[in-house]
Amino acid sequence: MNEDLLEMPLEEDIVREDDAAPETVPVPRSLVPHLSETAILLDIDGTLLDLMPTPREVWVPPGLVKTLNRLLVRTNGALALVSGRSLNDIDLIFAPDQFPAVGGHGADNESVDAHAPPLDKELKRRLAAIAKLSPGILLEDKGYSLALHYRLAPHAEKAIYAAVSLIRADLPNAPIEVLPGKCVCEIKHSGFTKASGVHELMKREPFKGRRPLFIGDDVTDETVFAIMPDLDGLAFSVGRRAKGVAGHFDAPSDVREFLAHLLDDERDATLP
Image 1: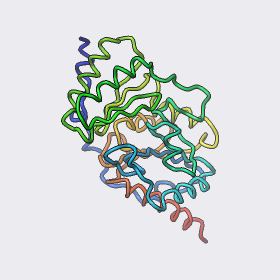
Image 2 (image 1 turned 120 degrees about the vertical axis):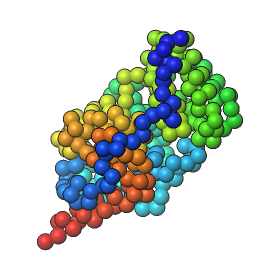
Image 3 (image 1 turned 180 degrees about the vertical axis):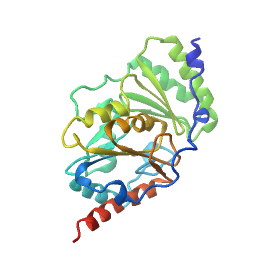
Image 4 (image 1 turned 180 degrees about the horizontal axis):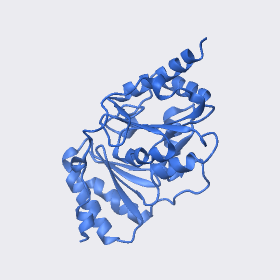
């Protein structure tokens, strides 16, 4: 078996913190003095919304949609959700409101014409069978990727990754990538990441020429953290002190409060 596959990291092995990372989030006004010059990019699960036992149980807290819509106006449309969820799923969560978005870890991008092809049906069938390893493993087919959630079956983590490694070893040329996350193992097309999606987004109006502010919580957001210096942007993590960020929030509720304060600070800055 390919040694690289055997060394694929489990969630428990991933380095979650960087001791050199800042411990506090600066005052909103000092961060984003002019929303008219800023692009606000936000992960959803674990960042805007609290994590739930299953993906379908997430809910949008009162006031969040109003805050997002006001930020959309203040930034002249330069606000986008950046998620591993599909665009259809994102729209359902926030319905009837709609927000610009990059979905499918960059594969489902409404700002460009090109999209990644759906995962091969036979590959999906083999991966889906892994859910039978234990009760509590939840299968989520996102079209461009397939996720195996084990928040309800944490004991099955090693068995899930071992089974995925066997499939990858049997299909060494399959253009897929494994994303370890918070109690989830996700298999997606290689060549697309949240970072690639953000890069494409920032080339287009109204995002072009603006300074991006990105907030994310999971391993899948680290590709975006890494490109923020190239875009003269700022990144913030949630729930942990990630490497390369300007600060961190303890929980999604703190992110929601921060976003609301951005509006207050912008209003105060315009007062005589």
